[in-house]
Each structure stands twice: as structure tokens, then as C-alpha cells.
Image (cartoon, rainbow, N blue to C red; front, side, top):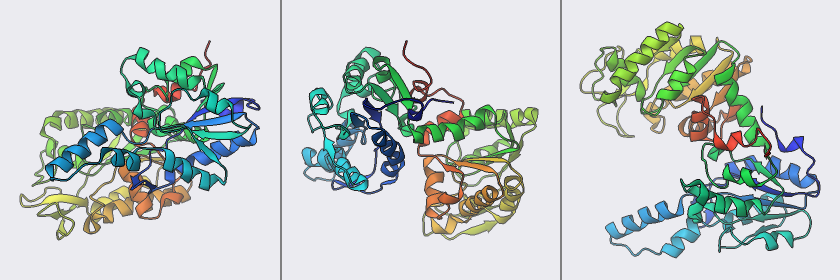
Length: 423
């Protein structure tokens, strides 16, 4: 368990809070408010306690890398690149600050485009209960520096803006950055916000002590990105459903023909070792036994039913077939805990979305039957949202990389600082 802001008396205190407002932007306008909305319960609670001030900080994209890519693309296309306009429309926090103000129905003071340094007098001069939003933390190289002494320069400055650090940015909890972890060295106490606590309270038990039987559904394109989570979940899972592109590396490792399907030849030995480990732990591995295939990777490609495990040379697998979904149904509906990370097909293409939609429906059905169901990872979260089933899951994680690393059993810097007081 981690401590939350509710465990403290914060009346009259200055709060410095890390949020994850890394939202999609277009022409200076917020395109998706999900992450902003997710932070509001913590913000509302803090304001209700009569604090002196609440200062919010977040990153918004990666300004230097993104700007460099955009400039290179513009030059390649023979177009004029307006760097200042690009940064203003994609990486400045001012539009996010305005958006939050409308959502809250309260004034949010923007700290200014000159960055995050030197804002103490601005913050401390505001009336009691004022919300201040700082500029994008990633405009400062110190934020992401691998040198802890460099990170500490920004962390110490940010810490001077608050008496208590509240971390509610689960999406960046796996990052050891100035505003997510280093800051905790310079404030008397650090605690989690409600979103962070909810994420940890749902995800950690899956690795530590899940209600069994646990069924894990792991999909996505590559085995290489999911090795650690597969190995971690083997310890407690009664069944492991492996879908998506990564399934075909496993099928090839078993000796089946996979046609033109996506595979990682350098991960065949890894797949074999995971299959052997599952035998030792008694974990049932479910791989596709039939498929929907296509001759080309295209949204308009015709779907061909492949009724065998082996895939003909002229096809690539794009989705799972009905027999595979039948095998999924038995284990998912028998679970007490379901962890889902990654789609089982190319759900972005309507012709190949049936499998992932069916899995989403099964997980929703399991939730209704009393199972604890947790969905993490960008694509699987996108899928349950696309199918309108997110509200029928126990928990849908806001952090792709963070949720994956937590399921791997790793200690995340942004979470660990919320477990102990500075001595």
C-alpha cells in the first residue's frame, strides 16, 4: 500500500502536484481530456481542504525530439517549418491550463512560457486556494537528465514551491525524472494522489497476491517487448492467453508454419523457454488454433478464414478465429482475476477487429460475474474504449509503459517515493 493525500492534514499547506497532462494536441487545442479528467478528483479534494496553494506540473510531449522530427519531415517535404508555432501548438501548457480552468470552473493561473524556474514569488503571492499550472517540465533538460545531480537542480526548485509533494501521474511513474521522483528528496513528505493509488491498488496485487485463478491476456506485436511481463505472470497465472503478432513467434517455435505473419526469429528460443517454464509452473498456454488471414497488411484486405493452426504461405494472420475464441471463453469466464495487456488482432482494421472485440466482451462478462478485471497498455485500452466497454471493466489503466513495468514486478520510481517519508 502507498500513502495518499488523504493520510495527511494539508490545511494551509502549499501543495506541489505532478499530474499527467500529456494529452494529444492539435493547433493548440486539447483533443482528448481523459487524463485531465482523471486528475480532477485529487485536485478537488486538495482544494476542499483549505490549502494555501496547489501548483500543478506536467510534461506535454517531448519538445526537443518532436520538434527535430517535425523539422526534418518538413524539410524532406520541401515545406517551411515554423518552429515557434509548432512548439506553441503542441507543447505549451497554456492551452491545457485554460482547458482545466473551464473543467473546474475555477481560475488556473499559468506560470508563464519562460519555464519552471523562479516561480516561488508568483505562487506565494496568490490568494489562498489558488491553482497554478507550470510550463512543460520537459522544456528543461534537467527534467530527464540521466545525471542525478542535474535532475536535482530542477527538482530542488520545484520542491521550493510546495510543502508536500503529491504524485498523481501514474503514466510517468516508471520515469526517474526531476518532477516525478527526484523532487521527493527535497520536500518533507511525498504521497500519492487518488489516481496513482487506484492504479497501484489494482495492478500490484496481480503480481504480488492475485485472487486466483488469474488469467492473463497478453497481446501486441512483439515478444521482445513483453518477455518480462510473461515471465512475471507465469508465477501466478493459471492460464496465459498469448495473442496478437507475438503469438506467431510462439507458433513458429512449436514448429507450425506461419506464412507471412509477423514473427521475431531472434525470439524463437525465448518463446521456447517461456513454453517450458509454463510446463514447470502448470500454467496453461493458449495460442491461436485458427485465424483470420489476409494476403496483405491493409485495412481493405479481404479476411480469409484459416481453420488450422498452421497458416498457408500466401497469408499473414491478422486475427484469431472462432475456435480460438471458444478456448478463450472457457478460461476467461472461469477467472477470479483477469489482466489484459495488448490486443489479439489488428483491431484497428474493421475486418480484423472481431477477435479483440470478443475478448473485450468476455472480460466485461467476467467483471459482471464478479472477477477483478484490469486492462492496461495503450492498444488494449484504446480497444475497450473503441468498443464502448471501458466502463464494464474493474479498472482501465491510464499508463501504458508504467502498467507494463508494474506487471513485470518492477519498482517504479514515482511510486516508491510515495511509500516513505524523507528522514
